[in-house]
Image 1 (cartoon, one colour):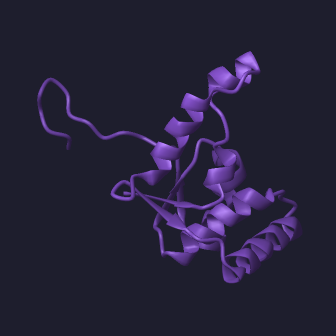
Image 2 (cartoon, rainbow, N blue to C red; image 1 turned 60 degrees about the vertical axis):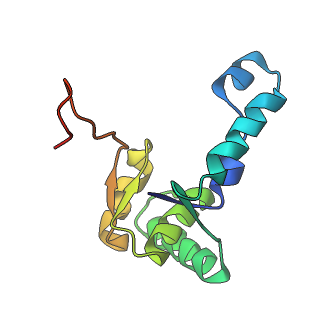
Length: 122
């Protein structure tokens, strides 16, 4: 199960091919919408006033430590905290890793656990 903030709907706006080609494709937009519609695989966390206030606190706390945290990234951290997540997966560890101690979240790069040669995963 993947849990993500509803801001992900904004962040995933186009495919790599659309970006490279500079041309939008309606079929790609439908695939993106289909990705978010699988509620067995993805749960969306609504961005509430409480989440926004915590995101602001994270930005302010980071600033006092000489760190920079973008608002959308702060919302992801606050959203993860709001559902008592243990791990936040991101390809952008450099911006998030320093917030482990503040949030109690473990920050990791996404990975896929799979078996090899027909063996089950560990």
